[in-house]
Length: 216
Length: 275
Image (cartoon, rainbow over the protein chains, first blue to last red):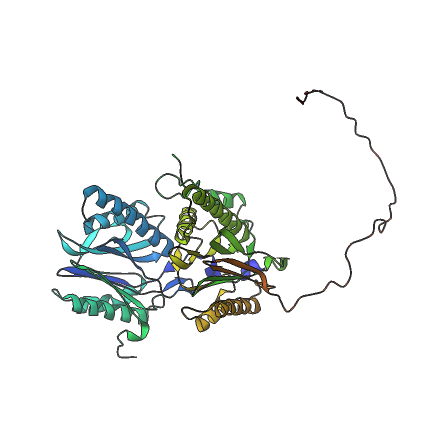
């Protein structure tokens, strides 16, 4: 009897219903994510950092099944380490994205995770790649996760070419804030990672410091 | 090639063999219900404090609506500096933690160092991910190593969460309420023990699957204090009569003796060398 009374989310797969976004600017990229991990109706972790490093200057944003996404990120982290040792220099963002894409495509039936790969390298500067379902495409910005549906209109309308670093960071924070307000599976705090030629900067923006819009 | 652990990682890629096997097994039951494994409704919790980690658990093991074990031990030993609380399918948590413990012992003996908590977590995650959720183990790992005090949780699908305070099991929402309210960074030992005790108590009171006593395990750089039980249930029952019966209580009515016919088939004599 107690077997059935046990809440369903205990045995359900843990998903990161999520909002993730990455945008490139001249000289680098900005990645952003929310921090909510849900299993059914229960929030399993309210402060999870979904921006996972693949290499010093390449990060990926996780969405979908938490276990699948974390494992893909770890595997690619390892593969990139080996690769960068073999070539003797920092890997290209395209290489990292290709490694993620290879796993996503080969196991597309079994896995349900979508990673956005973004970073900076010497040859191409800041780059953002989407790897949904095993495709590989370079985009000026990419949004993903369950919360992204609510902000497609906002990002399409507000994006302008040639934004500088500060404007990109503000753009990311605004997008995350709007999505977290409308999507039940996104929430918590906002994590921001800015990567450029000089280094990688990680920042956390707590709930009450997020920008508010008309109805708040 | 000598491995630092015995756990064999199979060849590259994901292994979904067991998922197809389980699907085939379910077909055998012809649409009926596959037998459900024993789940211990549970409340387990952990808190990182100034000098280490405190883990807590209730002690009830249920088999459907009957309490199978009133003093079940849910805090498992992994290594001298790492302990693990397990929720979910009882057999899975026992076996997984045993396996992890053996592998870490071998690693310790091979390398001469105490294992790190993050190593235990990685091994667990590797194994649980490979079985794609078929192993129903929700584990809270806590320990102290040379890099500091750590508390992790690993889910049955292989996802990791690293946070300063945690609760798992069917009573975890009740426990988490207490933890969210009372947690602060750098708690003192007594405060941390009281916080964990209160959170397990909330789980015991508000969840049918959790109950009886509370176990606490304190891990610090100096050593481990496994207090079992830390708090006894206030609803303890006393046995009114003895349940042992004298020989002769049940009268013997008839007796029948049947001799077994045994034949000697082979005789071998081995002389012992007593020189």
